Image 1 (cartoon, rainbow, N blue to C red):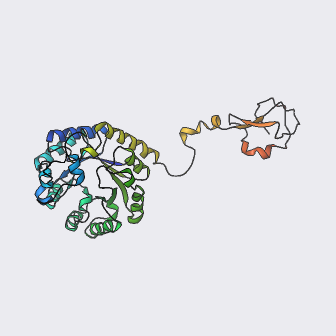
Image 2: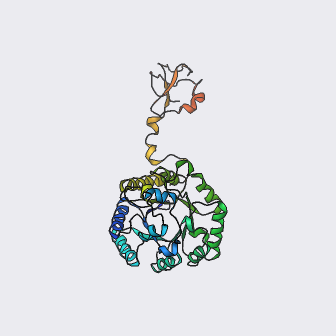
Image 3: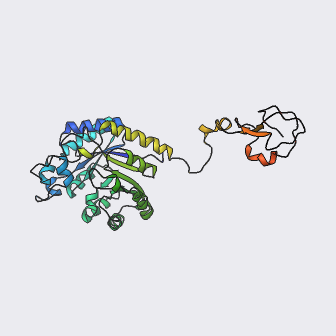
Length: 338
């Protein structure tokens, strides 16, 4: 299907560092019908400094504990190389594609060794020149997320990607707002269309709102990729659970998107569909006699009317019929023939 929307179920760090929870997330993503489940690959010491503090949403979502170090929070959420390999094998078993985002240079090297064939540049790395350049040099398709960005930021990142080996047609830009959860009034979904017009690439949407309405709307507006965080339970402790879907919601979102992609997948021309063709005669009307009409009598505005079904003379020929003579007798409600 050319209009198939790529749905990325973003597990992220919602496994809380547990390989068992990660497997359960794979199960739920596969059951929901997502195309890809995405994790995050990083070495905490390479990602943040010791002095880096947690974001407000992180502190809020993990209960505002006294220790607000990003480093200590992230150390608990790392997946080892062995974990990655086990999860890849489990994804293969479950029929869903394994994917992950790298957050440091060493992690890029490691993910390249896994031959995923696709890269995701997260919003926080869109101004990281060496990071973008390194990914670009592989010449593989890239999904570029644009939270916290002005158009100039996106333009600069695009220039690096293209300069160092990625073809424009290999890039998909995701509109995104990096707040967890994103207030609906800050979504600015029409910006996704502006990105498509400006950069002449495929576009999608990475969603952090509550619920499933906005990603569904994004598909109706032309998104070819949807990314959405999900969790086993929003009440679990961790930075992203509160802004994530639970499994039944993920399944509902995937189902709705599959319906919408069918609905927007036509050729764009207005014509009678095969499913509705049989209802034309039932729903439309014909010119009929409003009363008894004798042969030779003149058809008038008074002795004619329109009623269903529509397999007689169309009322659009009204002016053509009025003023002509009846060729035979007509009883009330008989379809007029000329």
